[in-house]
Image (cartoon, rainbow, N blue to C red):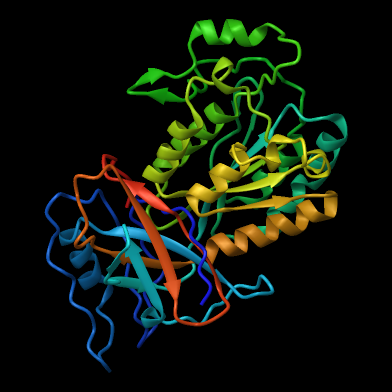
Length: 380
């Protein structure tokens, strides 16, 4: 048995796009913060019994407000998605204690995706990324929506979420990398990341960012990811939330970020957001010395902790292949849900491990959740 432990996020409840097919054990997932006292277990379907109707599942989820949601990707040894697993083939462990899988679905979800593009790349990398951007549309369905953003020392949001392919096409064509590097966006248009309703980018940080610091990375990657998480916070629960991060992995640290990588990861986990990182060619070719190859690299940490994945691009064509691959993967994850039982509810962080009974499969999900996360209101 092969198991891959990867990050679990917890909070944002999600509902299937369409009712489950007849005779399929397919619930409508949703989640909020685990309470100290677990609620009664949701009854499992008896053998031969049809799954509950959508309204029944919604009522059950409302009552069982302690559900922990796990989007799970399963691949075979060749890296292909495995689409035919049953509910009884999964095993879930929280803090090494096995949990009962209360709800399960293999239904596809539409995507809400923030495309977060590094605006301060080396010229050759920027050219390859620029040439590949239109291929992002090829991996999107008509149900998916995207928000195009860039970052350098500042976060540069685009025109907002849209599933209109023509609008996205025009915006991608007009996205020019490094044309506005190091220029702060107008504050009325977007205030940037905030913590406790206060701006995460102070005037002092902006002043410092405008000064050139030789030999030091000046990009605010953590702030940009945090801001992307905020943009996804209010997307409907019936959608997968995804950040597509295209970067060389260089990060300015606390000199140019108001938030830390850990702060950004917590924000992602709180809203069940997965990060799919694409490392640009220079980062790949220089991986022995590049931040992308180090354990502390934000590209790797964001992907691993949120149940996403990291891809290493070598040329324009590989970018195009990765766009299609990652959107298919994010859209077609399994969704497991359980009510925590038998674990210490006073512990701040709970680890998650998912196993399957079939041999030779790789499993990718989030590796834990923070018990102190306060659920935030979301659209149905």
